[in-house]
Image (cartoon, rainbow, N blue to C red):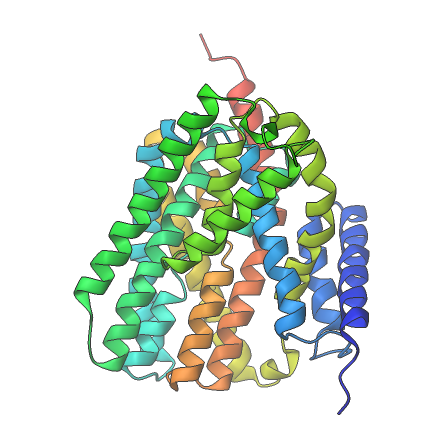
Length: 391
């Protein structure tokens, strides 16, 4: 079978994503959900105009990195630090409770120990890209709830990646504790050094991004920092998008912040739909032709939503129950980490193709279900916080 030319595939997924964007906006729904559906329509399982391959996936990776960089630029480091304790407790409980529930569900699905461990791990991490995308579309990045969600999502992404390392070791019959400890140490050191040193330098030299003679504007230095920290994060075992988010947070302290926002916006607007279209293209509707498969998807989806919401809600209660509701729901979407885990499980033989499809469907459905509910929750919280206190 001939493969469509790469340029045609990129055109197809971009056009389909933006058509979905337009359609969902007219329905009053989040645009990114429409982009995911658009990617599914042109993906291998439906029209077959777009395939998940190295060349096309590269555009999706750039889109995710740019999305998190742009979010980082809009996020002040001091704001994140102020919600640190709440975010840490929310992230911890948001990992532990879903992991335990996922292990039990794996038994119901008839999986062996490695399969149950991988299934449990696939429920742990929140999609930083999706959650931040929804927050940005609602203008809620600078709210306390928005900052808590971002901080908690970054934290539980780190925890989720550490869980993957432990699970992979247990599934193969051995756990390399020194290696896991080293990854944790490197992750913490990387985040602390980038945040402390990077923001400190730019606060003292706020025009540093335009000092190089090749930089008439801050755009190119900003992109270099973004790609460098994204690559470094991936090299030490973190997700590349964590490095991109930290890069955005650092350069957001410069005097050229607003110019950088203006120049980055059109580039991100071009690449970001490739990421959400890529997610949608991985849905295979034929995997759910049987009632049993649909039942598995429904069960895993319910467990994923309820346990993540419950864990994060309990962890975020210190900030008030209304805000905890919003933070809990904002952490429901799963994403790239879970898809990577499912791929590892499939490659190792711990997952069948059916279980792999069920996990991917769960990931995509949490992306689609969370945003429509999240929007009215954010508006509800805004109204309750703006209302005068009763006398």
